[in-house]
Image (tube, rainbow, N blue to C red):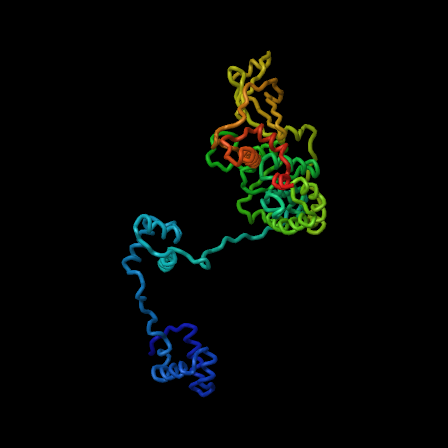
Length: 441
């Protein structure tokens, strides 16, 4: 019984052609052209093949350890360290830690091959990709509205990078609301959602990602009611908010974003639009054309949108609301400002009781107890805070813009202060939609 012989594809090709030469079906010159080698090399191969058989076509170095190979003891030591200390590290990080902590210099690719041979690491082909099976559209219009913010260079090199808030109906694929803004903030979603509700009515639910506007992401939070300002507003209107676990789950709006980043960018270019205000004026025209082109009819013609009720005041619902405890001196602290509640027969009883601060998008503040507005005045207003102060996500875009303006005024020197919410709101109202383009003009 003959021994087994391991050959690669190159050796198998040579064996096939040399067999044809042996059977006189090919000349040695023709074999040389097919193999891409010289006639002399073919004569050498054929001579060796005639004397030794197929074994002559296999390299003598096959199966032998390379002279430049690392010692086996080093390989075992590295694998032992990986299993004991770096079991969940990748090859690149393992390579860095071996050099830093143990003085072992081994290339990343060598470590990767050692891990694969030891069964500790899987190649890309071997890794099982997560399966995301498609789901059917919702049957009714207004049953589920997917919302998302798409941060992109919408104006290309003509203007600043900004965000497009997208609302799309899951049943029909129609765009329900579009609006450009500087970034994804709570107040921007307040404004867009209010416009949506006034135009279409209340849907059954909104479907979003895990952005902090929609979901409290801090684990084990001990304060608050585990609701964001946006989810609190929807709860007041009897609208559910559902957060997707993966981006594939809200694929309807993700695919719409890709289409918009192609078509809408080109439409804005053709019209020479380079600012947020101009773009928002154009969006209704684009939205109508988009829905006419891509919209579909729902499986069930029942419209699930509900009308707004008389007692649902949009002005109050879409405000930033935070509870505060009244001090013994009838004061409360909010947004680094001290508010002094005017004493009268009703307010003197509010000591150590909870009141609610209503912060409106235009900068107006109202303090209420059990729905009743309280008379107050501002005792002290701290306009700026020290560097490193915590800024909520809903004001991040405005804060950054404010800082940029301050730096320009001070000769590009870093501002040592950050604005309060009042200053941010004032800056946001007075700032042009595209400061860079406006300044250039």
